[in-house]
Length: 465
Image (tube, rainbow, N blue to C red; front, side, top):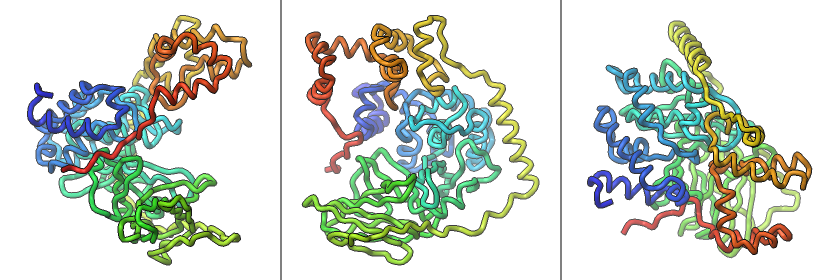
């Protein structure tokens, strides 16, 4: 740190203090210094970035993480590809042009919940909405345009959720669909759905504690900003509960009550959150461990106090907000034709671009590759990872073939980054423990808990002095 410039030291100190601790172990400080230096170069290069207020530059240009995506250097490459296309453009024109470029690189495809890096999306050419937005936000930030991912964590009128992008045009925040180019800002397929949302938010990885605010809440150490009022009618909704109570707000989605936000009741015995006008389920966990819950309709009331215990025959009726009944004015015919040409050209460019795919001439490695999902194969796979996974072939025949392929040979367990781990883990284990583990696998969990302490993914930093 002593060798850095004053600006590098100041920004990097703040970044390292607010990133998830796992990021520091996974990527190292040198990675984040490189990304920061790229952002500082961008600030000197683009006038709209030079003119950004300090916090907008730090949070929405310089910060290296968007969501829970894998991290990989990408912005220098994106900047080199985009800069010639933006010459002579105003900031709003540049925003639209970046999204056209994004559409030429990637399109929507439903996939699993693991969030790929922006570079993975760029290489393979597709991703779900959360991945498209990670890609588009990185592309926008790569040329100094302040951008953030915005989420409706759960729709209230149907199952599932959606993410899109907000950009700062020099005066205010505007929205667009990632990799879904439109000829003007504040346009997309999702505004009618967003007008029926109970909650829309953006997140920040710099959760400095502040005063109670109905448009802010914290969850797992992250700071969430409520953006619902920009898309739908809202009101500030108050839940009366003893100070320190944890208040959880949930929606009916996918056949279950799923949380969308949490607040802690303040010293005045209230938790306040801005919500859309519809049904919500509220559960309070009191400091004494007691739980209380009820259903409420925020259009009918702006304040509730959960009873000590609900009636035995209590019913929960969910009603989505009515939302907007009017569609945006149609685009003029000339802009409709321009949009069609843009979409057709983007599709043609995506189809013509060669896409890397992991493959191996080694039959053992090929067997391992065959166990991985398509998402993992759209790019290089670590050769040592394949060799290590092939070590599991020594256990073939000890269990049914489907179990062996999915639970021994396949190197992927969940949503973790794919890296070699088997031989390093074996080397770290005392040799005498291995026969015990095989005789009684429950001992493995005991060993894990004793040797790998659990920490919060995003610890809230202490307040400044």
